[in-house]
Image 1 (cartoon, protein in one colour):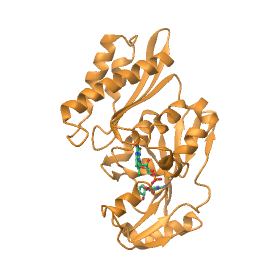
Image 2 (cartoon, protein in one colour):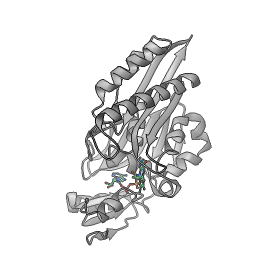
Image 3 (cartoon, protein in one colour):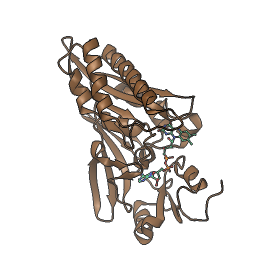
Image 4 (cartoon, protein in one colour):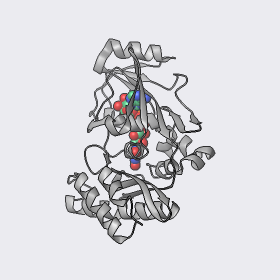
Length: 284
Ligand SMILES: Cc1cc2nc3c(=O)[nH]c(=O)nc-3n(C[C@H](O)[C@H](O)[C@H](O)COP(=O)(O)OP(=O)(O)OC[C@H]3O[C@@H](n4cnc5c(N)ncnc54)[C@H](O)[C@@H]3O)c2cc1C
């Protein structure tokens, strides 16, 4: 439980971060809250000879709510998300999801950027951000670029971010309609056995749009277009719910582990999705 030796850096600005990253390539890694990376280093599952702490880099935290979108700095903590009154009004699903991550101690340190950049299928925010159609901004020596959350995840711990790039912000179009983040876990503080993020818009008793993403049911988060499509044009009755659950089961790919066998995970995913859709619909 003791990590291998490493050099520790604490640059004051992004130029300093990028220069260390470019010098050491994939031997260097940035650290945000450290609540995924440090455990991995202690377990010797991550070898990081050069560790770059982002805590002193200015301009990376904060929540800005605009007319059409919300910008969240990468170093904003999960706890900041929970405490931000304006955000709870503008995008309440973020607070509902953040409250289900780990425990208060972890949430004081764990950041939004770290959670989405990590690439762990168990992290809650990647699926949430796919549901909300978020965009991730990354910066490297070549400049800035935006990557859609729905295109960001390639495999477990593999993302579209290059090793020499740093994620600086997450931008979300202002969500409309009803929402729900539903998560089944073995105990408080645990990662999901299955989780579902749902945003749904109702007009005249009918569903006009639905966005659905599932967590920890594949090696990447699963944005399921087919699940949303199964709800659109319906009154979200039992037949529509069953069609949505069938569509979702066609898109996920769970594997057996200490949270249960595949059949159990498929069952839990269906129950969780149904609950999330029903709650989102009741709020729409
Ligand atoms: C006991 C426990 C329970 C937990 N339960 C949950 C849970 O239920 N759900 C959940 O979602 N998470 C859970 N977590 C993880 C927690 O939310 C982490 O804090 C989070 O996943 C990573 O955020 P971080 O800021 O700590 O990132 P770090 O640990 O600092 O970094 C994680 C990875 O992301 C990279 N990274 C970080 N920031 C950036 C950036 N700005 N740009 C580029 N790369 C970056 C790092 O290099 C590293 O590879 C748990 C953690 C613990 C210790």
